[in-house]
Length: 181
Image 1 (cartoon, rainbow, N blue to C red):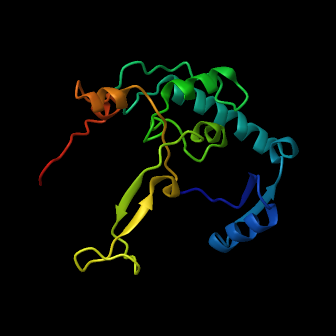
Image 2 (tube, rainbow, N blue to C red):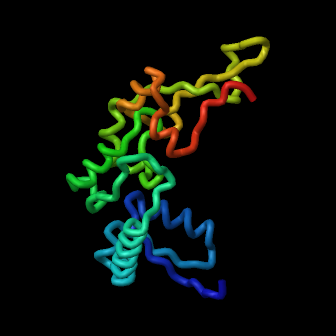
C-alpha cells in the first residue's frame, strides 16, 4: 500500500515477549515493541487508543443490525463490563440457543455470566466417530457450547412449541424450517 512500516507499538494483555517473538517471525522487517499498559508508556499508543475508542463509538452510533427482530435497541451503555446499561442490553438481547446479535463478540468476558443458563444443543458433525455408527457411516455429535456458541431461554420457544408462530429470532434472520431438500 506504499507505506514503509518500520516500528510498531502494541499494548498486550498476554505475555509481551512471546507476542513480540511471534510478530517478529511473521513480519521480520519490522521492529515490535510489545508492553502491558503500553497506552500509559508510549504516547503513540495512547493516541491510537483514543482513535480506536472514537472509531468504535462512531461505528456503534451508525450500527445497523443484521437481525431485524422486534424490540432491538441501541441503548448499549458504554460497552464496559461494569456498566449497568451494557449488562441490561445483553440481558435484553440474549437468545436461548444462538446467544447474542452479531454486534456482540461471544469471546467477550462480559458475556460469560449470561451463559450459565445456556441451552445445551447437540449438532451432528461430519467428523467421524469411531465409537458410533449409523447405517454403516459414523457420525459424531458436537455440543454447540463446545464450538463457542451458547444460548438462553425466552418466551419465543413457548410460542414455537404452541404452534402459534415462529420465534422473532428466526424471522429476523430469515431462517425457515426445511422439511425436505
